[in-house]
Structures are given as C-alpha cells and as structure tokens.
Amino acid sequence: MTAGDPLFEAFSIGNLRIKNRIIRSSISGRIDNYDGSGTPARIAWEEKFAKGGAGAIITAHVPICVEGRILPNYATLDCDERIPFWSKVVERVEKYDCPIILQLSHSGRQQDIAGFENGDRLPPAASDRIDNFHGLRGREMTIAEIDNTVELFALAAERAVRAGAHGIELHSANGYLFTQFLSGPINDRADEYGGSLKNRARFLLRVIDAIRKRVGPLFPLIVKIAAADHHTAVTPWLFWQGEGNTLEDALLVSKWAEEHGASALHVSVGNIFPHPRNPAGGLPLPEAARLYDVMLSSGEHTIRNYLIFRFAPSLGKFIWDRTTDGIQTEGINLDASEAIRKAVKIPVLCTGGFQTGSFMRKALKDQKCDAFTIARPLIANPDLPQILERGDEVTQKRRCTYCNKCLVHVLEDPLGCYELSRYESYEEMVSSVLDFYKNA
Image 1: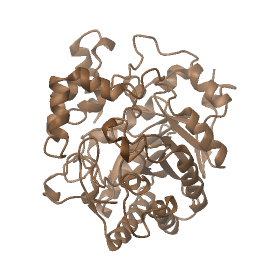
Image 2: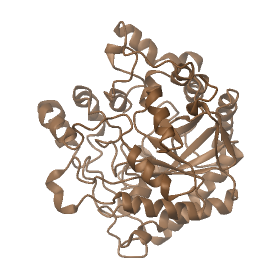
Image 3: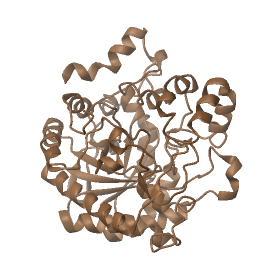
Image 4: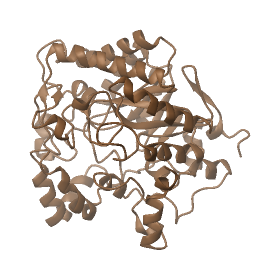
C-alpha cells in the first residue's frame, strides 16, 4: 500500500527528511550504567524499532546533568565523554534509514529516584510547590541557576550535533522542568519567570534561543508541549487550585516556540507523569502495588498512593479513571493537535495510543497532525510500521491493550510488554521482554 499511502509519505522537520509518518516516541528503561554512560543494551533497544520500520526515533529522556536526572541508569549527555556512545547509537540506527532525535531533559522536582549523588538535596525546580500526585518536592531555582541551566541545555544540544544526532527534542511537557515553569498552578514565582504566561514561557524560549545560537537555524529542534494541564485530574479535592493551562495557553506557547526557532511541535497533555490522559488507558493497580515501593522515599504522597494501590484498588481506579471514562484512548490528543496545527506553520506531531492504520490515515487526511509518535503499541509490536505498510492491521491478539503494565514495570524491570493475554505462556512473555538483550 506504500504508493499513495499518506502514512508512508515522507515529510520533513527542518532539513530532516523522515520516510514515513510513524515516529517511535520517547521510551526506554533503566538499561544504561549508573554513572550515565551508555550500554550495548541501549543500542540494541533503539535498533529494534529502526529495524521494525519506524520513520524516526525519539530517544528516552537524555539528562543534561545528573542533578536533573529523572531516574538513574539512563544515558546522559552531560559531558563530552558521552558523545562517542551516542555516535554509536546513531550509527546503528541510521543504517535502516531511520534518523534518531535525542530528547534533552531536566527533571526539576519530578525526580522519581534521585540517586545517591544527589543525596537528600532537593532538585532545582521552577518553584517550591509540591507535586500533587507523588508529593515530589523541589526548590525554587535562583536566577543564576536558571542562567546556568539554559547554558547546560545549549551545551547538550551542541554535543548532540557532534554525536551525529539528526535532531533534538526539548521535553517541555508531562511535568518536567519546562512544564513546571509553564504551568500556572505549579509556578508561583514573583520574578520575571512567574506571573503571566509570557513570563512563565521565558525559560523555554531562552533555551530555544541558546540552542539556536549554538547549533544554527537549520538543525531540527522539536518542542514537546502539553496541550492542557488537567491539573486536578487525580486530586479533585484540590479543585481550588484550578485546572491550570488550557489549550488557548498552549496555542500561544506554540506560536512563541515557532517564532524562536522550533522546527516542529509534539503534542501531549498533562502537567504530571504519569497522568490519566498520558499515557491514557488506566493504571495497572496490582503491578503498581508491587513495584511502586521503590518510590516510597521519593515523595510526600507516595505512602498514601502505595496504600491505596495495595489495599483500596477500587478507590484508586475510580480516582484515576474519573476524568477519562468514555474517552477513546487512540487519538486522545488529536483535537488539540489539530488546533495547534492550524495556529502554526511548522509540522505538528501527535502522541496518543496510535496503532490502527485506517484511523491514522483518516487523521492525516483530516489534517489533524503531520505524524504520529508511538510508544506502547510499538513496545507491543516493534514491526507495527511494516504491518501497516503491507496494508494489514494488527490482529486483536497482538494489539496493545493500553494496560500500562509497561509503565510501572520500568521502575524496576526491563521495559517491555507485560500483558500476559498477548502471549501463549509466561515464558514467552519473559523471552519477548528480554529479546533486545540478545543483540546487545
């Protein structure tokens, strides 16, 4: 079906040509070395999606500094010594005509497991406000720390270029540092980085400017944004805080990002992670009760969450699902993506459980987005692009169920599909989860 198939038409982000409209979104696991150096397992992990036909790969979060690390055992780009490893990743992936885009990140307060290097120090954040879900806390950054962090992003971008990466993405959604500045209910600063939306966007726009100064105007730079905060989705008792940034706010931020040099926008939703709408599909409470314990010392609400997950799962399910009941998971962000696409002239990527070829082709025809970023359905079926290119659909047995077991397992286990109903046996599931290690 490739000829005339909109899903397999090439498109461009800046000067980067991408062979189809299926992009592997930011996913990985704790498979690198503790010190931030990369491993052969990481290379094999990225390669399997390139081999499966993905048009491009956006890496999991790449910390720009240890202080801003979300989890240990993720490869960093905080020093020149990391460049050769990322060059190896690029070399392995691009032989499949699959460019790789490094997602530069900083946790801010959303530091799930700090690691011993950070000790008991609170991570630098936009403000002192506590995270509603996990109860994660940061400390308000000084102006000097903001200036330094802007430079750290620019240096990491320059290293990405030197490593041969085909582009970079700024993770400015889902509760991480950029979101903490952008989000009204989180950012209560009283200086030039707080107050109005323009002030709250100042940090993000400064980083874009600094990166453009380092890497030039043509290097592909994607900005991932939250189309809306849905701030009290899991904390309805905090209704007085309001729902936070709206789609109208996201439209303004999108336009400003384009004006400052963004090559594309990547639409997600939510100002925490995980969030009922990202990744949509529900919270696997039995797994959460078993695996969430590694975060017990990380936040002030983690014990509350753990007790709910373990002893009151019905209550946990009600709270988690209350704002998403009746909403279709596949394409959950398409309406927001369409609105943003109409407001800018650069490509718009959309995430949201995509795995049905006919559904995706219609979304392209209706001009709701320019490409799809996919995580969980590609974990379930790394060869999904090849299936769709043949004109087939994923069989019911093989479809991603959106159970989100992969999400909670990643805290302790290798990232993979843990939905037993998709396999003939437990042993087959284990073999599937560990398959990329065989090629490491």
